[in-house]
Length: 273
Image (cartoon, rainbow, N blue to C red; front, side, top):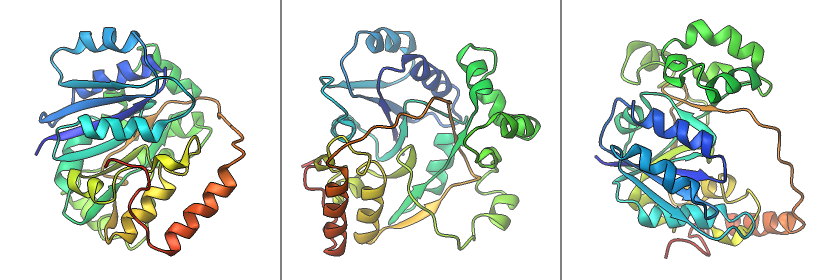
């Protein structure tokens, strides 16, 4: 099964370089990287040229405000994989990331993961090349106390991962009845399932509603089940200051979303088709 990793990127080319470096170290080799750039730059083509051994597709669009949903839909159309994994441009995948999603993929199910929030100390070490993310993932139990101490956003425990078909995960995590929510920076689905709901809804404009909140309820309304891959694999989120933005129309769009939800209108108004 071919996997397409769709990476939403906006100007953090150093982090994208780290993602591509870790893609080359994956334990699963049938994949492509599709870069969904919400801008147009010369930096990414130059960066991609350094990774000629990886199948990479670069999609870009004019930098005209935050149009992440449109950018991701462009990348979905350009992708060729049977299975799609979505992440953000500041999230570095663990070495078994593709393998885990491939093993746990099942029809009618959306896999929802979590991110391990790194603090400024670990993020700086990784960006400066003083710590390899694969090393951090493979020896996470050793690093865990330091990551927890350095972290400012919590959830350091999500880096404690176990083989999805192994005894520990199957015994303690696989059968958990706890509900899960969808994060735009770490989830996956079959290609046809994304087309079934018509992709991400671009009608939410510059708000973050379409990134995870909207697409989660639409998947559920369409009959899909969400299954957690927490503690099976993770992405390491590089620390940055919060980017709080006031968007005047967000409240109105939120109520629009609630109306669509009550009517089970799971097809995106402005999407892939």
